[in-house]
Image (tube, rainbow, N blue to C red; front, side, top):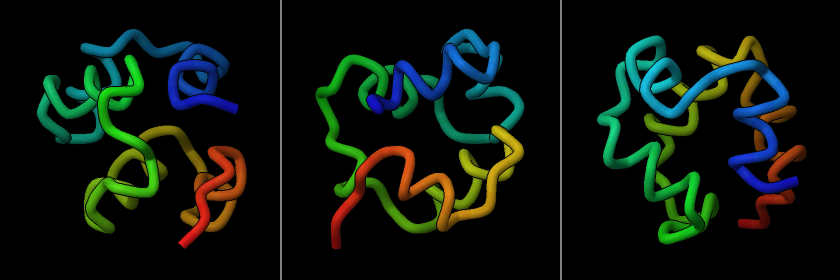
Length: 68
């Protein structure tokens, strides 16, 4: 699943997810368009986005097929 697919599945626009998570909108946009690969995001960013989406970090990473 792509970041964009996950965001849409949870009913957020890029701006809404940025506001709810506290992650800069340009960061969310870069993840959304694939300019930044999910496995390259900072841990703190991943945690904020996971919480905003109502997911624990493990589920968030698994849904994005992140490999470390």
